[in-house]
Length: 285
Image 1 (cartoon, rainbow, N blue to C red):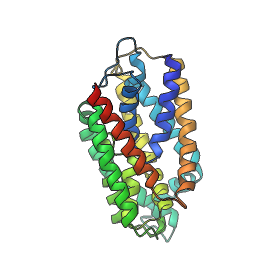
Image 2: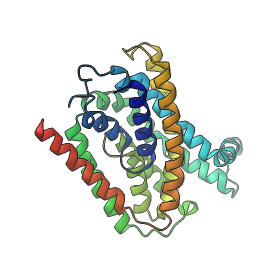
Image 3: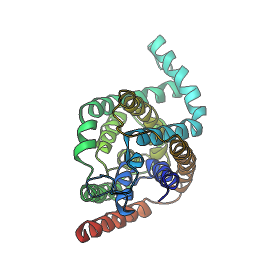
Image 4: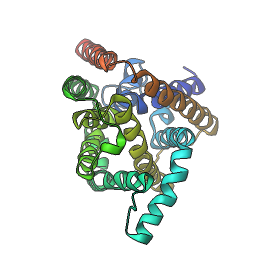
């Protein structure tokens, strides 16, 4: 298959699955496997371009989803950044909801930073087999289903406390395991704490912005030190980046609208179907 077409497919997959609660890291493992681009260990099959599954390409796709987040929520961040700086300066929230929300987002960061630094490289190397992703997809489906059923779904973001925000940050750290889903696990945690579906998703996206930015910077650092191991293909990078940005932006808006009046059932079912499909492919190999 043409590398440009592969780049577009992977960009769309990254953009959609980064924000829908179905696991982007899991899909970036299983999609190339199901399409016959890689083997079960994630290695490119003969005749396949290794660039599509390389570190360089993955970094650019994640930067595309970061641009999608910033484009969608730029008005929010235009308020939160100065509000957060004012909070540090005054050492007070002064009853300002923007200052408080900036503080809530900040509270979610330590778990992501600590576990990301300690475990990201290990998990990237050791936990990328399609069958393990399938198991995590099933586990994540169960967590999402239970949270959607049990949660009160009555509170908006302004009712979230700092302890609850920290718990959502801890939950988000589990998304380092491919198949769990950053948005899925953080939305589940928000639902478990009583947030409405839309509020849980919105907070998940806001708290993901600095995490994705930090992870992107970390991966760019590795890329600049020569760890990509493949020749960079500029055209594929450009179309992959564009596909991830556009599909990510559309996914954010669609999911927030969808969750105003729909449960998580379709995402739970989708995760189970993908897991079953992967297991069938692995058993037939």
